[in-house]
Image 1: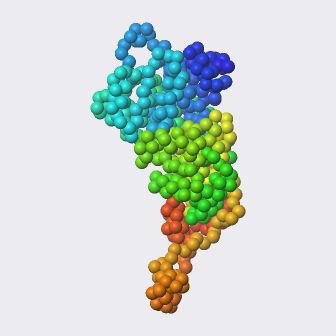
Image 2 (image 1 turned 120 degrees about the horizontal axis):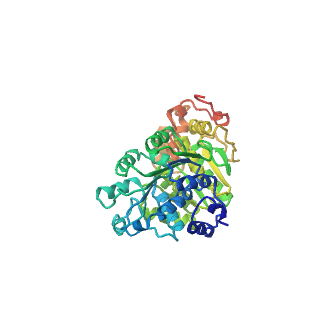
Image 3 (image 1 turned 90 degrees about the vertical axis):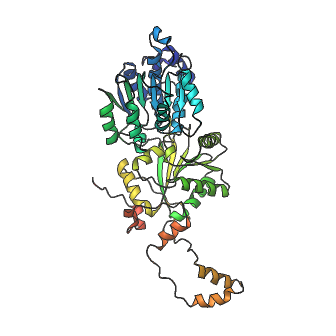
Length: 462
C-alpha cells in the first residue's frame, strides 16, 4: 500500500505510518515536493487547498531531522525545524500532522500560538523540542522573553505564506528571519503566487525547486459553484430556507465582519438551526469548542470570517456558503477550498445582492469564467424591502389600532405629504433592516442596476 511513497525515498517508519493512515499513493504536490526536499533543496510550492501540502513538507522534514548523526542525538533537544502558519487552527492541525507522521521517530514537537496561557508553552520549550510549529505573534513573544531559541534551525517552513502577508505579518516574519542561521533549508508553501509572494521568495530562497500543481489562483474542479441572486435584506431568510429545505447537516458560512458572524449565528439559532461563530475575537478554547461541535455534528452551521478560511480542515465538508462576498477575490478561492477536499466533491454557494456586483466581477475575472446563476423561487431579487416606520407613522398606526391619544397624533400626521421615494431608498432600507447586509464599494453603490447581476462581468484591465 505504501510502495508509492517508498519510491519517493521515504524511510520505512514513514511509509508505515502513511499506510496506517489509509493513504495509497501520493498527491501531485507530494510526489513533486518530497524528493526535492529530501535532497536538501529550497522549495517554492503552490497548490490549491486540500491537495496534501502539509504531508508534502512534513514527511521529508521528519526524515531529514531523524537522519542526524549519532553524536547530535546526544545533545539536548533544540529547535531544528520551524514551521510558521498564519492562524491558530492551521498551526494546531500542522502540529497534529507532525505528531501523527512522526510517531515512530525519536523527534519531539510542540505548538505555540496566542490566545492561551503562555506558561505551558514555556515549560514545553524548556524541556526541549526538535520541531516548533508557531504563529508569528506568539513566537515573537517567546523570543522577546528568551524562552525560545532559533539559533539551531536547520529547516524553515512558511505555510500559507500568502495568507500571512494578507494578515499583515510581513514585519513579524522579517524579524523572525533575522534571528535564524544563514545556512538553512527554506520551504515556502502557498495557495497562491501573488507578486508579493514572489518578492518574498526572491529574498528568502536559494535556487529553489518550483512546484505548482494547479494553475495560478485556480479553484478546485471538485467544487460545484453557483450564485443565488437575492436582495441583501433577504439573505438570512434564503440561507435558512436552503439549510432547512435541503436538510443540510454541515454548512460552513462566511461573512466579512466578526460582528456579522455573531449576529447571523444568533439569528439562525432563533430559527431553530444549531449555529455558532468562529473568528479572531473568540478565545481559543471557544474556537476549539465551536470547531469540535461542528465536526461532531452537534452544530449544523459554523459561521466564520476569513481568518478561518485557511485554518479549517474538515473531512468531506459538503457545503460552503458565501453569505457575503469577500473584498479580496483570492479569498473566494480559499473559502470554497474548504469543500471538495481529498477527492471528495463539494458545493459552494454565494448569496449575491446587487451591491456586490463589482466584487463578483472581480472574482469571475480571477477565475476567468462566469459562475452559474440560479434564482431561488420565492426569493427573486428586486423586491422592495419592508419600509421602516417613522415615529409619526408608528403613532398613526397606534391610532388606527385604537390606542387612545394616538388618534390626535394621527390627525396631525395624516395631513403630511408622503415622503418622496428615491432610487437609493431600497438599498438604505436594506442596510438598516439587516445589520449583516454588506456595504458595497463606492463603485458598486453608484448606479448599480439589478439586471447587471445577470450579465457577464466587464473585463476591466484585460
